[in-house]
Image 1 (cartoon, rainbow, N blue to C red):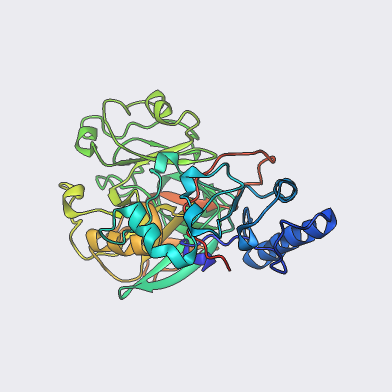
Image 2 (image 1 turned 90 degrees about the horizontal axis):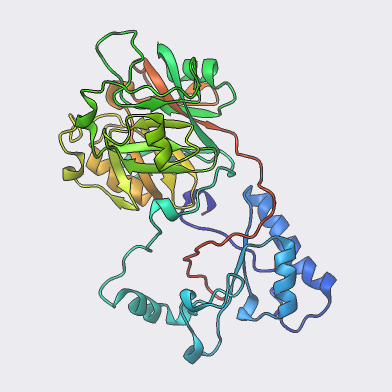
Length: 384
């Protein structure tokens, strides 16, 4: 469940006591802290959310929750007439929800009663993105398509001086990376050229942080494609505009502390929705069955890189990736260039075409100093 990217596991105490009548601070701390510690040890991720047994709490319980390091907590009213949606909650430590016995009514109220749609998520520019999750490899099959997905860590790019295998670029430019996938599209004019299609900036290259324009005359043909922007703390995917994004200052206007940037082939999934054929415009071969490489952000805010292990068209791949829990996904160089390396070894069954650019995942960023932050949580949680 944790690895699916669809579910966030919260603490619910050790013994499922109703906490409201407890006044013994030591007893409260054991229920709150021990549960958190065990879950974090077993799952390997921070447990930041709590659900009150029976929905009950007191001011003391709320105080001890904050001291234990929780960011938010879910409550509920046992009186059906007093149930309210989450947006009417008092604060993040008392997020209200509907009881499981009235889930159908809650869906009807939230959705107009027409049909059960996927949960609505915030636009990517407003969502929490984390670079502090452990790196994990998953091999899954969805609708008959086998995929290799690697999630977590901190995304960066490397722009080599020529063309090499992915694991060779990683070893030379980003030796600390755990995994890497082939990156943006590159010029085929010369076999040893490292010139990219569209602007590129990489913090790992022979010229770190230098802005390369690509081919100025051809860049307008890329308008509307996803411009990938990476900083030490976040990722942005914005429509490329050759006039606006023709300099490092133009990229910094979108993301002030940008360290890496390139233009992707197209969105496979955008704001949680798979993209249709029209979204790819005149992109050559988008509708052909090919090996495909991709990268993006899942619904938990984790970076994800991956490849298909069998051939598929871009539209079909987008539908499948949305089902796996990916929220924003950009297609990378594909076909014979499709390549993924994990812990120094290629996962491909063939030797891919050499490329000059990769997206890599470094180990997770260290924890930030403790500070209260607002967040948005959309999660129907049962009482028990």
